[in-house]
Picture (cartoon, rainbow over the protein chains, first blue to last red):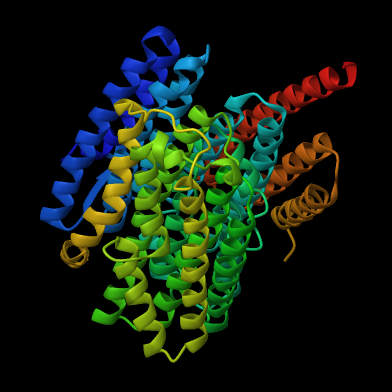
Length: 478
Length: 98
Protein backbone atom coordinates (compact mmCIF):
# COMPACT_ATOMS: atom_id res chain seq x y z
CA UNK A 1 0.00 0.00 0.00
CA UNK A 2 2.64 2.53 0.90
CA UNK A 3 6.36 2.14 1.08
CA UNK A 4 6.94 5.38 2.97
CA UNK A 5 7.23 3.61 6.32
CA UNK A 6 9.60 0.92 5.10
CA UNK A 7 11.76 3.56 3.39
CA UNK A 8 11.84 5.74 6.50
CA UNK A 9 13.43 2.90 8.47
CA UNK A 10 15.26 1.15 5.64
CA UNK A 11 17.12 4.10 4.10
CA UNK A 12 19.16 5.09 7.18
CA UNK A 13 19.82 1.41 7.89
CA UNK A 14 21.20 0.87 4.38
CA UNK A 15 23.06 4.17 4.68
CA UNK A 16 24.71 2.93 7.89
CA UNK A 17 25.89 -0.22 6.08
CA UNK A 18 27.11 1.77 3.08
CA UNK A 19 28.99 4.19 5.34
CA UNK A 20 30.69 1.21 7.00
CA UNK A 21 31.73 -0.27 3.66
CA UNK A 22 32.92 3.02 2.12
CA UNK A 23 34.30 5.02 5.05
CA UNK A 24 35.81 7.68 2.77
CA UNK A 25 32.46 8.51 1.26
CA UNK A 26 30.67 8.33 4.61
CA UNK A 27 29.97 12.09 4.84
CA UNK A 28 28.37 12.20 1.42
CA UNK A 29 26.43 8.96 2.07
CA UNK A 30 25.24 10.30 5.42
CA UNK A 31 23.83 13.56 4.07
CA UNK A 32 22.21 11.89 1.04
CA UNK A 33 20.64 9.17 3.18
CA UNK A 34 19.22 11.67 5.63
CA UNK A 35 17.82 13.79 2.79
CA UNK A 36 16.21 10.63 1.39
CA UNK A 37 14.70 9.51 4.68
CA UNK A 38 13.60 13.09 5.32
CA UNK A 39 11.74 13.01 2.01
CA UNK A 40 10.03 9.74 2.91
CA UNK A 41 9.07 11.18 6.32
CA UNK A 42 7.48 14.11 4.47
CA UNK A 43 5.62 11.65 2.25
CA UNK A 44 4.42 9.74 5.29
CA UNK A 45 3.43 13.02 6.94
CA UNK A 46 1.27 13.88 3.93
CA UNK A 47 -0.33 10.41 4.04
CA UNK A 48 -1.17 10.77 7.73
CA UNK A 49 -2.54 14.24 7.07
CA UNK A 50 -4.87 12.86 4.41
CA UNK A 51 -5.92 9.53 5.95
CA UNK A 52 -5.45 10.18 9.66
CA UNK A 53 -3.12 7.20 10.07
CA UNK A 54 -1.14 4.62 8.15
CA UNK A 55 -0.76 0.88 8.75
CA UNK A 56 1.53 -1.69 7.28
CA UNK A 57 2.08 -5.35 8.11
CA UNK A 58 5.62 -6.21 7.06
CA UNK A 59 5.97 -9.20 4.76
CA UNK A 60 2.21 -9.55 4.37
CA UNK A 61 1.77 -11.76 7.47
CA UNK A 62 -1.50 -11.43 9.31
CA UNK A 63 -1.72 -9.38 12.51
CA UNK A 64 -0.36 -11.22 15.52
CA UNK A 65 2.44 -12.88 13.64
CA UNK A 66 3.71 -9.94 11.63
CA UNK A 67 5.70 -6.91 12.70
CA UNK A 68 3.18 -4.14 12.24
CA UNK A 69 4.14 -0.57 11.45
CA UNK A 70 1.80 2.22 12.36
CA UNK A 71 1.93 6.00 11.97
CA UNK A 72 -0.41 8.58 13.46
CA UNK A 73 -0.15 12.28 14.34
CA UNK A 74 2.11 11.72 17.35
CA UNK A 75 4.55 9.44 15.55
CA UNK A 76 4.68 11.51 12.36
CA UNK A 77 5.44 14.67 14.35
CA UNK A 78 8.24 12.88 16.21
CA UNK A 79 9.57 11.56 12.89
CA UNK A 80 9.57 15.09 11.46
CA UNK A 81 11.47 16.37 14.52
CA UNK A 82 14.00 13.56 14.07
CA UNK A 83 14.43 14.22 10.34
CA UNK A 84 14.98 17.99 10.72
CA UNK A 85 17.23 17.79 13.77
CA UNK A 86 19.23 14.94 12.22
CA UNK A 87 19.83 16.95 9.06
CA UNK A 88 20.98 20.07 10.93
CA UNK A 89 23.18 18.02 13.26
CA UNK A 90 24.75 16.24 10.27
CA UNK A 91 25.65 19.49 8.51
CA UNK A 92 27.27 20.70 11.71
CA UNK A 93 28.98 17.33 12.30
CA UNK A 94 30.86 17.59 8.96
CA UNK A 95 32.39 20.80 10.22
CA UNK A 96 32.88 19.65 13.82
CA UNK A 97 34.71 16.43 12.99
CA UNK A 98 36.90 18.07 10.31
CA UNK A 99 39.72 18.53 12.79
CA UNK A 100 39.55 14.96 14.02
CA UNK A 101 41.22 12.10 12.15
CA UNK A 102 38.63 9.31 12.47
CA UNK A 103 35.36 10.92 11.45
CA UNK A 104 34.41 7.74 9.58
CA UNK A 105 33.34 6.14 12.87
CA UNK A 106 30.67 8.75 13.46
CA UNK A 107 28.53 8.24 10.38
CA UNK A 108 27.57 4.53 10.56
CA UNK A 109 26.61 4.89 14.22
CA UNK A 110 24.77 8.13 13.59
CA UNK A 111 22.72 6.66 10.73
CA UNK A 112 21.99 3.59 12.85
CA UNK A 113 20.74 5.88 15.60
CA UNK A 114 18.38 7.62 13.15
CA UNK A 115 17.17 4.23 11.82
CA UNK A 116 16.49 3.05 15.38
CA UNK A 117 14.59 6.25 16.21
CA UNK A 118 12.47 6.02 13.07
CA UNK A 119 11.79 2.33 13.78
CA UNK A 120 10.79 3.13 17.34
CA UNK A 121 8.35 5.83 16.29
CA UNK A 122 6.73 3.53 13.72
CA UNK A 123 6.48 0.22 15.61
CA UNK A 124 3.08 -0.99 16.71
CA UNK A 125 4.49 -4.18 18.19
CA UNK A 126 5.69 -4.34 21.80
CA UNK A 127 8.62 -6.66 21.14
CA UNK A 128 9.77 -4.78 18.06
CA UNK A 129 9.79 -1.69 20.24
CA UNK A 130 12.20 -3.49 22.59
CA UNK A 131 14.53 -4.24 19.67
CA UNK A 132 14.49 -0.63 18.44
CA UNK A 133 14.97 0.59 22.01
CA UNK A 134 18.11 -1.55 22.35
CA UNK A 135 19.42 -0.51 18.93
CA UNK A 136 18.91 3.10 19.93
CA UNK A 137 20.64 2.56 23.27
CA UNK A 138 23.64 0.75 21.77
CA UNK A 139 24.24 3.32 19.02
CA UNK A 140 23.77 6.21 21.47
CA UNK A 141 26.31 4.68 23.87
CA UNK A 142 28.85 4.09 21.11
CA UNK A 143 28.43 7.70 19.94
CA UNK A 144 28.90 8.98 23.49
CA UNK A 145 32.19 7.13 23.75
CA UNK A 146 33.39 8.60 20.44
CA UNK A 147 35.34 11.36 22.18
CA UNK A 148 37.71 8.69 23.47
CA UNK A 149 38.56 10.58 26.64
CA UNK A 150 38.45 8.73 29.93
CA UNK A 151 35.45 10.70 31.21
CA UNK A 152 33.42 10.09 28.09
CA UNK A 153 34.14 6.33 28.12
CA UNK A 154 33.22 6.14 31.80
CA UNK A 155 29.99 8.07 31.16
CA UNK A 156 29.20 5.86 28.16
CA UNK A 157 29.69 2.67 30.17
CA UNK A 158 27.39 3.89 32.90
CA UNK A 159 24.86 5.03 30.29
CA UNK A 160 24.98 1.54 28.73
CA UNK A 161 24.48 -0.34 32.01
CA UNK A 162 21.61 1.93 33.08
CA UNK A 163 20.04 1.64 29.64
CA UNK A 164 20.28 -2.17 29.73
CA UNK A 165 18.60 -2.27 33.14
CA UNK A 166 15.83 -0.05 31.79
CA UNK A 167 15.22 -2.19 28.73
CA UNK A 168 15.23 -5.37 30.84
CA UNK A 169 12.44 -3.85 32.92
CA UNK A 170 10.54 -3.08 29.73
CA UNK A 171 11.14 -6.61 28.37
CA UNK A 172 9.94 -8.24 31.61
CA UNK A 173 6.71 -6.25 31.23
CA UNK A 174 6.36 -7.46 27.65
CA UNK A 175 6.84 -11.07 28.81
CA UNK A 176 4.02 -10.67 31.34
CA UNK A 177 1.72 -9.10 28.77
CA UNK A 178 2.38 -11.91 26.30
CA UNK A 179 1.76 -14.54 28.97
CA UNK A 180 -1.51 -12.87 29.98
CA UNK A 181 -2.96 -11.88 26.60
CA UNK A 182 -1.11 -13.99 24.01
CA UNK A 183 -0.36 -11.09 21.67
CA UNK A 184 2.26 -8.39 21.21
CA UNK A 185 0.21 -6.06 19.04
CA UNK A 186 -0.32 -2.78 20.90
CA UNK A 187 -3.96 -2.42 19.96
CA UNK A 188 -4.88 -6.01 20.77
CA UNK A 189 -3.14 -5.78 24.15
CA UNK A 190 -4.76 -2.40 24.80
CA UNK A 191 -8.21 -3.85 24.15
CA UNK A 192 -7.72 -6.54 26.84
CA UNK A 193 -6.01 -4.52 29.56
CA UNK A 194 -7.96 -4.24 32.78
CA UNK A 195 -7.42 -3.74 36.48
CA UNK A 196 -5.76 -7.10 37.10
CA UNK A 197 -2.41 -8.05 38.67
CA UNK A 198 -0.80 -8.97 35.33
CA UNK A 199 -1.66 -5.63 33.69
CA UNK A 200 -0.57 -3.65 36.72
CA UNK A 201 2.70 -5.54 37.11
CA UNK A 202 3.46 -5.07 33.41
CA UNK A 203 2.60 -1.37 33.63
CA UNK A 204 4.89 -0.95 36.63
CA UNK A 205 7.86 -2.80 35.08
CA UNK A 206 7.60 -1.14 31.67
CA UNK A 207 7.09 2.37 33.07
CA UNK A 208 9.95 1.99 35.57
CA UNK A 209 12.28 0.72 32.85
CA UNK A 210 11.37 3.54 30.49
CA UNK A 211 11.61 6.23 33.19
CA UNK A 212 15.17 5.06 33.83
CA UNK A 213 15.90 5.54 30.11
CA UNK A 214 14.05 8.89 29.99
CA UNK A 215 15.97 10.12 33.06
CA UNK A 216 13.01 11.31 35.11
CA UNK A 217 14.18 12.61 38.51
CA UNK A 218 15.54 10.77 40.60
CA UNK A 219 16.56 8.37 37.83
CA UNK A 220 18.43 11.14 35.97
CA UNK A 221 21.78 10.49 37.69
CA UNK A 222 23.43 9.14 34.53
CA UNK A 223 22.26 11.87 32.14
CA UNK A 224 24.41 14.94 32.93
CA UNK A 225 27.69 13.00 32.64
CA UNK A 226 26.69 11.20 29.43
CA UNK A 227 25.24 14.24 27.68
CA UNK A 228 27.98 16.66 28.68
CA UNK A 229 30.94 14.39 27.83
CA UNK A 230 29.81 13.41 24.33
CA UNK A 231 30.97 15.33 21.23
CA UNK A 232 28.71 18.37 20.59
CA UNK A 233 26.68 16.94 17.67
CA UNK A 234 26.09 13.75 19.67
CA UNK A 235 25.02 15.69 22.77
CA UNK A 236 22.51 17.54 20.62
CA UNK A 237 21.01 14.30 19.32
CA UNK A 238 21.00 12.66 22.76
CA UNK A 239 19.20 15.52 24.46
CA UNK A 240 16.85 16.40 21.63
CA UNK A 241 15.91 12.98 20.32
CA UNK A 242 17.07 9.96 22.34
CA UNK A 243 15.47 10.86 25.67
CA UNK A 244 12.35 11.94 23.75
CA UNK A 245 12.09 8.41 22.37
CA UNK A 246 11.69 7.06 25.91
CA UNK A 247 9.12 9.72 26.70
CA UNK A 248 7.25 9.01 23.45
CA UNK A 249 6.99 5.36 24.47
CA UNK A 250 5.71 6.18 27.97
CA UNK A 251 3.17 8.57 26.45
CA UNK A 252 2.01 6.01 23.92
CA UNK A 253 1.79 3.15 26.43
CA UNK A 254 -0.04 5.27 28.99
CA UNK A 255 -2.54 6.74 26.58
CA UNK A 256 -3.17 3.74 24.34
CA UNK A 257 -2.25 0.46 26.04
CA UNK A 258 -2.65 1.00 29.78
CA UNK A 259 -5.24 3.76 30.33
CA UNK A 260 -7.50 1.32 32.23
CA UNK A 261 -4.77 0.10 34.54
CA UNK A 262 -3.38 3.48 35.63
CA UNK A 263 -4.63 4.68 39.01
CA UNK A 264 -4.88 8.34 40.00
CA UNK A 265 -2.12 8.01 42.68
CA UNK A 266 0.18 6.53 40.02
CA UNK A 267 -0.41 9.52 37.77
CA UNK A 268 0.09 11.90 40.72
CA UNK A 269 3.40 10.22 41.55
CA UNK A 270 4.67 10.79 38.00
CA UNK A 271 3.54 14.41 38.20
CA UNK A 272 5.30 14.88 41.56
CA UNK A 273 8.52 13.43 40.17
CA UNK A 274 8.12 15.77 37.19
CA UNK A 275 7.84 18.76 39.56
CA UNK A 276 10.93 17.61 41.46
CA UNK A 277 12.76 17.28 38.13
CA UNK A 278 11.81 20.85 37.12
CA UNK A 279 13.07 22.35 40.38
CA UNK A 280 16.18 20.20 40.85
CA UNK A 281 17.25 20.28 37.18
CA UNK A 282 16.83 24.06 36.90
CA UNK A 283 18.67 24.64 40.17
CA UNK A 284 21.58 22.43 39.10
CA UNK A 285 21.67 24.17 35.72
CA UNK A 286 21.98 27.48 37.54
CA UNK A 287 24.90 26.11 39.58
CA UNK A 288 26.74 24.57 36.62
CA UNK A 289 30.20 25.92 35.85
CA UNK A 290 30.35 24.54 32.33
CA UNK A 291 27.98 25.32 29.46
CA UNK A 292 27.48 21.68 28.45
CA UNK A 293 26.61 20.65 31.99
CA UNK A 294 24.14 23.54 32.16
CA UNK A 295 22.46 22.31 28.98
CA UNK A 296 22.36 18.73 30.28
CA UNK A 297 20.73 19.73 33.59
CA UNK A 298 18.32 21.91 31.67
CA UNK A 299 17.26 18.74 29.83
CA UNK A 300 16.49 17.08 33.18
CA UNK A 301 14.27 20.06 34.04
CA UNK A 302 12.52 20.20 30.67
CA UNK A 303 11.72 16.48 30.85
CA UNK A 304 9.95 17.30 34.11
CA UNK A 305 7.44 19.51 32.24
CA UNK A 306 6.65 16.63 29.89
CA UNK A 307 5.84 14.32 32.80
CA UNK A 308 3.73 17.00 34.49
CA UNK A 309 1.87 17.17 31.17
CA UNK A 310 1.49 13.38 31.21
CA UNK A 311 -0.12 13.55 34.64
CA UNK A 312 -2.54 16.28 33.54
CA UNK A 313 -3.35 14.20 30.47
CA UNK A 314 -4.19 11.25 32.70
CA UNK A 315 -6.41 13.36 34.96
CA UNK A 316 -8.34 14.96 32.10
CA UNK A 317 -11.32 12.96 30.83
CA UNK A 318 -11.58 12.39 27.07
CA UNK A 319 -12.85 15.37 25.11
CA UNK A 320 -11.65 18.63 23.55
CA UNK A 321 -9.92 19.61 26.81
CA UNK A 322 -7.80 16.46 26.65
CA UNK A 323 -6.87 17.15 23.03
CA UNK A 324 -5.58 20.56 24.12
CA UNK A 325 -3.38 19.03 26.82
CA UNK A 326 -2.20 16.30 24.43
CA UNK A 327 -1.21 18.94 21.87
CA UNK A 328 0.52 20.97 24.58
CA UNK A 329 2.64 17.98 25.65
CA UNK A 330 3.66 17.28 22.05
CA UNK A 331 4.40 20.98 21.46
CA UNK A 332 6.61 21.11 24.56
CA UNK A 333 8.47 17.98 23.42
CA UNK A 334 9.00 19.34 19.90
CA UNK A 335 10.08 22.80 21.09
CA UNK A 336 12.54 21.31 23.54
CA UNK A 337 13.90 19.03 20.80
CA UNK A 338 14.66 21.96 18.50
CA UNK A 339 15.79 24.35 21.24
CA UNK A 340 18.11 21.92 22.99
CA UNK A 341 19.76 20.71 19.80
CA UNK A 342 20.28 24.34 18.81
CA UNK A 343 21.81 25.09 22.21
CA UNK A 344 24.19 22.12 22.10
CA UNK A 345 25.33 22.93 18.55
CA UNK A 346 25.91 26.57 19.53
CA UNK A 347 27.87 25.41 22.59
CA UNK A 348 29.94 23.23 20.26
CA UNK A 349 30.83 26.30 18.17
CA UNK A 350 31.74 28.33 21.27
CA UNK A 351 33.78 25.46 22.66
CA UNK A 352 35.79 24.97 19.48
CA UNK A 353 36.52 28.70 19.09
CA UNK A 354 37.22 29.50 22.74
CA UNK A 355 38.85 26.15 23.53
CA UNK A 356 36.70 25.66 26.63
CA UNK A 357 33.09 26.00 27.82
CA UNK A 358 33.56 27.54 31.25
CA UNK A 359 30.71 30.01 31.66
CA UNK A 360 32.67 32.47 33.80
CA UNK A 361 35.28 32.98 31.04
CA UNK A 362 32.94 33.56 28.12
CA UNK A 363 33.16 37.37 28.15
CA UNK A 364 33.17 38.86 24.70
CA UNK A 365 31.62 35.86 22.97
CA UNK A 366 28.92 38.11 21.52
CA UNK A 367 31.58 40.20 19.77
CA UNK A 368 33.49 37.22 18.39
CA UNK A 369 30.58 34.93 17.52
CA UNK A 370 27.49 37.13 17.03
CA UNK A 371 25.42 34.58 15.12
CA UNK A 372 26.11 31.77 17.60
CA UNK A 373 25.29 34.02 20.55
CA UNK A 374 22.02 34.84 18.83
CA UNK A 375 21.32 31.09 18.47
CA UNK A 376 21.94 30.61 22.21
CA UNK A 377 19.51 33.46 22.91
CA UNK A 378 16.87 31.97 20.61
CA UNK A 379 17.20 28.55 22.26
CA UNK A 380 17.05 30.30 25.63
CA UNK A 381 13.77 32.01 24.74
CA UNK A 382 12.28 28.59 23.98
CA UNK A 383 13.72 27.01 27.15
CA UNK A 384 12.33 29.76 29.38
CA UNK A 385 9.01 29.60 27.56
CA UNK A 386 8.79 33.23 26.46
CA UNK A 387 6.49 34.17 23.59
CA UNK A 388 6.58 33.59 20.65
CA UNK A 389 8.22 30.18 21.27
CA UNK A 390 6.27 26.93 21.11
CA UNK A 391 7.04 26.30 24.78
CA UNK A 392 5.10 29.45 25.72
CA UNK A 393 1.86 28.08 24.27
CA UNK A 394 2.58 24.61 25.62
CA UNK A 395 3.16 25.94 29.12
CA UNK A 396 0.09 28.17 28.83
CA UNK A 397 -2.11 25.15 28.09
CA UNK A 398 -0.50 23.11 30.88
CA UNK A 399 -1.06 26.00 33.32
CA UNK A 400 -4.70 26.41 32.38
CA UNK A 401 -5.22 22.64 32.67
CA UNK A 402 -3.63 22.68 36.16
CA UNK A 403 -5.94 25.53 37.17
CA UNK A 404 -8.92 23.61 35.82
CA UNK A 405 -7.95 20.70 38.09
CA UNK A 406 -7.30 22.99 41.06
CA UNK A 407 -3.61 22.00 41.13
CA UNK A 408 -2.21 25.28 42.46
CA UNK A 409 1.07 23.71 43.42
CA UNK A 410 1.77 22.88 39.77
CA UNK A 411 1.30 26.52 38.80
CA UNK A 412 3.78 27.52 41.47
CA UNK A 413 6.35 24.90 40.38
CA UNK A 414 6.08 25.85 36.70
CA UNK A 415 6.44 29.53 37.63
CA UNK A 416 9.56 28.90 39.70
CA UNK A 417 10.93 26.62 36.97
CA UNK A 418 10.51 29.34 34.36
CA UNK A 419 12.18 31.95 36.59
CA UNK A 420 15.12 29.60 37.23
CA UNK A 421 15.36 28.92 33.49
CA UNK A 422 15.44 32.67 32.84
CA UNK A 423 18.19 32.98 35.45
CA UNK A 424 20.41 30.29 33.92
CA UNK A 425 19.90 31.55 30.37
CA UNK A 426 20.64 35.17 31.30
CA UNK A 427 23.66 34.10 33.30
CA UNK A 428 25.16 32.73 30.08
CA UNK A 429 24.05 35.71 27.99
CA UNK A 430 25.30 38.13 30.62
CA UNK A 431 28.82 36.71 30.28
CA UNK A 432 28.54 36.44 26.50
CA UNK A 433 27.70 40.14 26.18
CA UNK A 434 30.30 41.17 28.75
CA UNK A 435 33.24 43.27 27.62
CA UNK A 436 36.28 41.36 26.48
CA UNK A 437 39.67 42.66 27.54
CA UNK A 438 40.71 42.98 23.90
CA UNK A 439 38.32 43.09 20.98
CA UNK A 440 38.90 40.58 18.23
CA UNK A 441 37.30 40.50 14.79
CA UNK A 442 33.90 38.77 14.62
CA UNK A 443 33.93 35.31 13.08
CA UNK A 444 31.18 34.09 10.78
CA UNK A 445 31.42 30.54 9.50
CA UNK A 446 28.15 29.78 7.78
CA UNK A 447 28.24 25.96 7.73
CA UNK A 448 29.23 25.94 11.37
CA UNK A 449 26.72 28.42 12.66
CA UNK A 450 23.58 28.11 10.59
CA UNK A 451 22.45 24.66 11.85
CA UNK A 452 22.19 26.02 15.40
CA UNK A 453 20.48 29.19 14.16
CA UNK A 454 17.99 27.31 12.01
CA UNK A 455 17.05 24.97 14.85
CA UNK A 456 16.68 27.90 17.25
CA UNK A 457 14.48 29.75 14.74
CA UNK A 458 12.34 26.66 14.37
CA UNK A 459 11.84 26.33 18.13
CA UNK A 460 11.09 29.98 18.71
CA UNK A 461 9.31 31.20 15.60
CA UNK A 462 7.95 28.34 13.49
CA UNK A 463 6.59 26.24 16.36
CA UNK A 464 5.31 29.29 18.21
CA UNK A 465 3.53 30.97 15.33
CA UNK A 466 2.44 27.77 13.59
CA UNK A 467 1.20 25.90 16.61
CA UNK A 468 -2.51 26.42 15.85
CA UNK A 469 -1.92 24.20 12.86
CA UNK A 470 -0.46 21.51 15.14
CA UNK A 471 -3.74 21.09 17.01
CA UNK A 472 -5.67 20.89 13.76
CA UNK A 473 -3.30 18.16 12.61
CA UNK A 474 -3.76 16.19 15.84
CA UNK A 475 -7.51 16.55 15.53
CA UNK A 476 -7.56 15.41 11.90
CA UNK A 477 -5.41 12.41 12.69
CA UNK A 478 -7.30 11.45 15.86
CA UNK B 1 -1.56 -28.31 39.48
CA UNK B 2 2.18 -27.91 39.43
CA UNK B 3 4.04 -28.58 36.21
CA UNK B 4 7.56 -27.89 35.05
CA UNK B 5 6.63 -24.70 33.20
CA UNK B 6 5.71 -23.06 36.51
CA UNK B 7 8.99 -24.28 37.99
CA UNK B 8 10.90 -22.70 35.09
CA UNK B 9 8.89 -19.52 35.34
CA UNK B 10 9.62 -19.20 39.06
CA UNK B 11 13.28 -19.98 38.43
CA UNK B 12 13.32 -17.17 35.85
CA UNK B 13 11.85 -14.72 38.35
CA UNK B 14 14.42 -15.75 40.99
CA UNK B 15 17.29 -15.34 38.50
CA UNK B 16 15.96 -11.95 37.39
CA UNK B 17 15.69 -10.85 41.04
CA UNK B 18 19.25 -11.98 41.82
CA UNK B 19 20.54 -10.25 38.69
CA UNK B 20 18.74 -7.01 39.51
CA UNK B 21 20.00 -7.09 43.09
CA UNK B 22 23.61 -7.55 41.99
CA UNK B 23 23.35 -5.05 39.12
CA UNK B 24 22.30 -2.31 41.52
CA UNK B 25 24.51 -3.12 44.50
CA UNK B 26 27.79 -4.33 42.95
CA UNK B 27 30.47 -1.68 42.51
CA UNK B 28 32.72 -3.67 40.16
CA UNK B 29 31.75 -3.02 36.54
CA UNK B 30 32.53 -6.56 35.31
CA UNK B 31 30.27 -7.99 38.00
CA UNK B 32 27.53 -5.60 37.02
CA UNK B 33 27.80 -6.63 33.37
CA UNK B 34 27.49 -10.29 34.46
CA UNK B 35 24.58 -9.42 36.75
CA UNK B 36 22.70 -7.76 33.90
CA UNK B 37 23.28 -10.87 31.80
CA UNK B 38 21.81 -13.04 34.54
CA UNK B 39 18.86 -10.67 34.79
CA UNK B 40 18.38 -11.05 31.04
CA UNK B 41 18.52 -14.85 31.25
CA UNK B 42 15.86 -14.73 33.96
CA UNK B 43 13.54 -12.67 31.77
CA UNK B 44 14.16 -14.99 28.81
CA UNK B 45 13.35 -18.01 31.00
CA UNK B 46 10.01 -16.46 31.97
CA UNK B 47 9.30 -15.97 28.26
CA UNK B 48 10.22 -19.55 27.36
CA UNK B 49 8.40 -21.19 30.27
CA UNK B 50 5.28 -19.54 28.97
CA UNK B 51 5.59 -21.28 25.59
CA UNK B 52 4.70 -24.67 27.11
CA UNK B 53 1.09 -25.52 26.32
CA UNK B 54 0.74 -28.97 27.93
CA UNK B 55 2.14 -32.44 27.11
CA UNK B 56 0.00 -32.99 23.99
CA UNK B 57 0.04 -29.55 22.36
CA UNK B 58 2.92 -28.11 20.35
CA UNK B 59 4.88 -25.37 22.10
CA UNK B 60 4.14 -21.77 21.16
CA UNK B 61 6.84 -20.76 18.67
CA UNK B 62 6.60 -16.97 19.14
CA UNK B 63 8.45 -16.82 22.52
CA UNK B 64 11.27 -18.91 21.02
CA UNK B 65 11.68 -16.43 18.18
CA UNK B 66 11.56 -13.51 20.62
CA UNK B 67 14.14 -15.03 22.96
CA UNK B 68 16.49 -15.80 20.06
CA UNK B 69 16.29 -12.14 19.06
CA UNK B 70 16.79 -11.14 22.68
CA UNK B 71 19.92 -13.30 22.97
CA UNK B 72 21.42 -11.62 19.90
CA UNK B 73 20.73 -8.19 21.40
CA UNK B 74 22.16 -9.28 24.76
CA UNK B 75 25.36 -10.58 23.13
CA UNK B 76 25.83 -7.30 21.24
CA UNK B 77 25.23 -5.24 24.37
CA UNK B 78 27.63 -7.37 26.44
CA UNK B 79 30.30 -7.07 23.74
CA UNK B 80 29.95 -3.28 23.71
CA UNK B 81 30.09 -3.13 27.51
CA UNK B 82 33.23 -5.29 27.62
CA UNK B 83 34.88 -3.22 24.88
CA UNK B 84 34.16 -0.01 26.79
CA UNK B 85 35.49 -1.56 29.99
CA UNK B 86 38.72 -2.55 28.22
CA UNK B 87 39.10 0.97 26.85
CA UNK B 88 38.56 2.37 30.33
CA UNK B 89 41.14 0.00 31.82
CA UNK B 90 43.64 0.94 29.12
CA UNK B 91 43.21 4.61 30.09
CA UNK B 92 43.66 3.66 33.73
CA UNK B 93 46.92 1.82 32.98
CA UNK B 94 48.21 4.82 31.03
CA UNK B 95 47.37 7.07 33.94
CA UNK B 96 49.10 4.70 36.39
CA UNK B 97 52.26 4.61 34.29
CA UNK B 98 52.60 8.40 34.24
